[in-house]
Length: 120
Image (cartoon, rainbow, N blue to C red):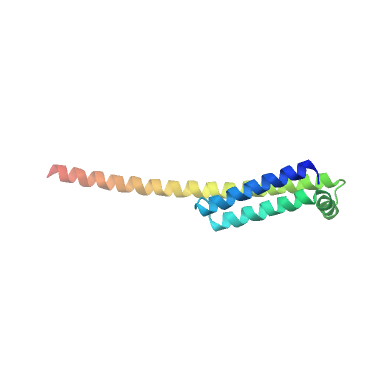
C-alpha cells in the first residue's frame, strides 16, 4: 500500500467520524448521513483498489487510460453534487421568500391593529 493510499484512508476515516458526530448532534438528517456514508465508502474502495477500479471504469467507458476514467467519473460526481446543492439552495431561497412575505403581511396587520388601538 502506498503512502497516498494511507493518507486518503486516514482522511476518509476522519471525515466519517465528523459525519457520525454531525448526525448525532442533529446537524445533518438521515438522508444526508447515508449519502455521505455511501460517498466516503466509494472513496475508501477507490483508495484501496485504485488501479483495478480505474481499469474497470476505463473498460466500461472505453477510455485510453485508467486515470482518465477516474477523472471523468469524478467530474460527473462533482456535477451531480453541484446540482443537488443548487436544488437545495433554490428550495431554501423559496422558503425564505415565502416566510418573509408571511412575516411582512403579519407585521402590516399588527401595525394596522396598533394604529386602531392608538386612535381609540
